[in-house]
Length: 627
Image (cartoon, helix red, strand yellow):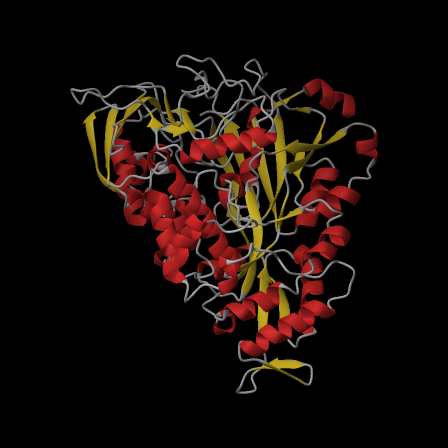
């Protein structure tokens, strides 16, 4: 089943679910003689939207003019240009930077799902970039690619299977943990020819593993074998894509210039994209200063992350004159959902009743209505796109799945839907306060003289860590509510580099984090929720979740091909994560908020599954008119 671009939002969600639970990945297989059957696309489901020989994606203007120099203001910083290792912070790691369409990443064999270049009108389908063709065996264990002979790095060195082999060994030895976890699922890799690569995947092979392998970056062997890949660097790396890195001011700015003789500029997946001659990313540690640079004309577009600023910060002459355009772009699959995360390595948060008590004192209704101007919706599921029904009655199938864990899971999980308990937004939290004190007493805490203490008389005190002072305005009302039960929560704001360092070292009590909205919950779940990643450096299991029920559910989801089994296990996993209160669900938006000066021109088509500016172009006449 594939996406149809003109379907309603609800139909799209249903189609995602149908894709998700399909046991097939089309590439297509091998024939009876074990000969590869080469295809132009790799797809979960029946057929890709675009046939072999397609000319361009429908969401872009294939005749978009090239030219222009643009600048974008980014909230964050960087201290390295190597995005593939755990050390350092690369520009690509800054919030929302990928939406500006250039990140300084190496090209993969195929594109369509990952951050390099997301889907256009469908999800779960990849099209060739460096690879001209792909083949996947019926058992999904043999994955092969033909490489384009014309593919080149920026120094004109050909991209060959030697580079793919080298990348595999390099990332396996020195890459960030999520690369290592992925590569551990590959049994072997070989090069039958200069432009032919073959992976043998370890069974059982998940539905999406072949797609993730196809989107691994391809690094230049002749460049990196002379350098220390495991260390941070600010030297512009050798790439093969439409832009090269030309100028770097550490922590402050990165300049990219379009490669006029880029080898892949006429490929169907590239036509209409990468139109600006020069792109400069300017980094600011303070989001307010980043916004000021945009409104003053020093930046050409600004992706707005703050609902309050979107509602009140654009009362500008340039907006009234039509020189700045505000737009809310619908996004069928929002990129992430936010949560407050408990670090369970801290003994304070070991007891589920403690986490639940803290959670119920977060006044979501007041926060959204007063501080966010009603711009967001509450997160009620980790996997809403997958049809999770944790807010509905548990099914008999789910009960049977979770039966081995009745001693460790809350009894209410088995007889009622999950519901977030919290204040109603009117300032009265007395009901929640009483309920929270009851739970805290059960967990061994006592309320004495306005302070919550344990049996040793030690106070309940913890720190909320973040890199932006802006978040303080909706953390402090939460802290005041916690103070009514004697809990002391202190907000600590630090700069981005310090924050990223402390997160990597797990030195925090509570943070705000995000979980990507996975259309296809698969082996990536190991990185976010499985016990094996809890103590792994660089994993996304930041909270240190170690739950046997979660582990068992993920093991089945990642490897099963049974439609009903997958669906039931996803819903059961959602229930467990919610009922265990490992997080305090925050909010999400179904739109991307962007403001831009009118010389920036978007294509007529809208990419609802991975919005970014890579298909926009520059109108010099509009710029002259503004000046």
